[in-house]
Amino acid sequence: MTENTPYQQLTRTFQRLSRFSHLAAIAGWDMFAMMPPGGSVARGEALAELGVLQHQILTDKKVGQWLQEARQQDLNDVEQANLREMQRQYDQAALLPESLVEAKSLAGSRCEHAWRSQRPANDWTGFADNLREVVRLSRQEAQIRADARGGSRYDALLDIFEPDMTSARLDSLFADLKSWLPSLLSQAVEKQAKQTLIAPQGPFPIAEQRELGLQAMRILGFDFDGGRLDISAHPFCGGVPQDVRITTRYNENDLLSALFGVIHETGHARYEQNLPRPWVDQPVGLARSTAIHESQSLFFEMQLGRSERFLNRLLPAVRERFGDRPAFSQDNFVAWNQQVKPGFIRVDADEVSYPAHVILRYEIERALIDGEIEVDDIPSLWDEKMQHWLGLSTTGNYRDGCMQDIHWTDGGFGYFPSYTLGAMYAAQLMAAARRALPTLDRDIEEGDFSALFDWLRQNIWQHGSRFTTSQLIQQATGEDLNSRYFREHLTTRYL
Image: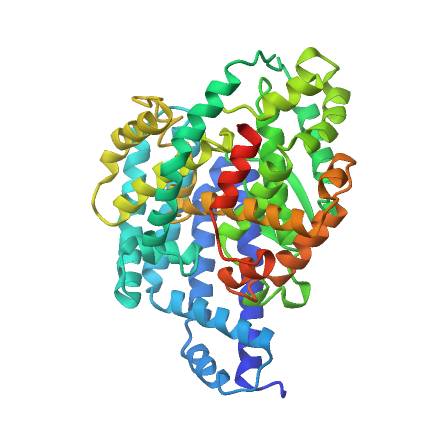
C-alpha cells in the first residue's frame, strides 16, 4: 500500500490528533491535580483553544473525502475497524459548530473549578448558576446530535460514551435490577446486622496511606515506568497509555476509602497500559467504551479487590503499616470490607447499593437533558430518590447529595450508566475467567494474579476498539451482556 492512499492520509491525520489529545490529557490531569487556583482561567482558555484546533483538523472536508475513498480500498480487518472508528469520530465532530465546542469547554472549566470550593461550602446556589450554562450548552449539543441521528436528546449524548446503547435498553436492564435489588439489599443489611464489627480507628497518616496504595498498585501490576499516583478533589484516571495518571483523595480517619479508590483507578490504568501499542495513535487503539473501561476498574475493585481471598493477601501490608489491631483481624477485616451499608456517597458505596446511586443519577440527568426538569429541580428529586432507594434524606445537604460528583460540571451527561453496565460486565467477565482458569481461586489466594491478568489482556485489553462492545463481550464470555451474572455474584457474596 503506497503512502498516499486515502487510508494512509487518514492514519497520519489521526496520529496528529492523537498527539494533541496527549497534550490535552496531561494538561487536564495537571489542572485537576497540580495547577494552582490562579491558573484556572488561562488553562481553561488554552484547553478550549486546543479543542477547537482538534475539531478543525478532524472536520476538514479532506477528512470526509478520504473516509469515502478509503472504503473502496482493500483493507485488512484491523484497518477496517480503524476506518469504522475514524468515521464515528468524524461524524460525531462534524455535527458541532466550533463556537459550541469552545463555549462548552470554557463553561465546563469554569463550573468544575468553582465546584471545588462550592462543594465543601455546600453552596448549591453558586454551583447552580454555573451548572445552568453547562446544561444549556449540553442541550444544544444533544439537540444537534439527535436531529442528525434520530432518537432523544439524551440518547444522543449516551451514544458518545457507550456506542449503540439507548435509554430504552437501559430502562430494560435497570427494570430487571429494580425487580430484585431492593430485596437483596434489605436481606444483606438484615443478615449483616447480626455481626459485631470493629471499625478501624484513625488517624491513619496520609504518607502511610499513600505507601499502602502504591504497594497495592504494585501487587496489581501497575507499570510505574508509565504512570504515577497523585491527589485530586475527585479520584480519576487520566493521561495516555504511555503515561497514565491516577489520583485519589485521603482522609486521615478513613483508611479504606482512599485504598479502594486507588485499586479502582488501577483497574482503569491496567486497561490503558495494555491497550495495543501498535495502534496506540489510532482510533482502533483506544478503549472500547466507558462501560468496558468501568468494567475493568470494578473488576479490580469489586470482583477481585473485595473478594475474601484478595483481602487476605492485602491484610499483611495493612498490618505492616498500621499495626496488628483487633480491627485488622482476618475475619473482621474481610467483613468490614464486604459491609453493605447504604450511604450518601457514590464512590464509597458498597457494590450492592451502588446501582441505586447510578439509577438515581441516570433518571435525573436524562430528564434534565430531555427538558423534563430544570437545574432548580435537581435537589428535591435527588432527595426523593435517595429516600426511595436507600432511606436517606439529602435535604439541605448538597455536598453529599447532588454536588458530590464531578461529571455534570463539564457536561458529562450520559456517563453515569457506564458504572452499572461496567459492574454487570465485570461480573460476567469474572464468571468467564473462572470457567477458563480452573485454579483461579487458589491462584488469588496465593497472590498469583498472572493467569488472570493474562486472560484479561488476551480477551479485553489487547483488542482496544477493534470490535464493537457486543462483539468483544461475546468473544470473551460466549454471550452478550447478561445481568444474571451480576445478580449471582451479589447473591453468592452477600447472602
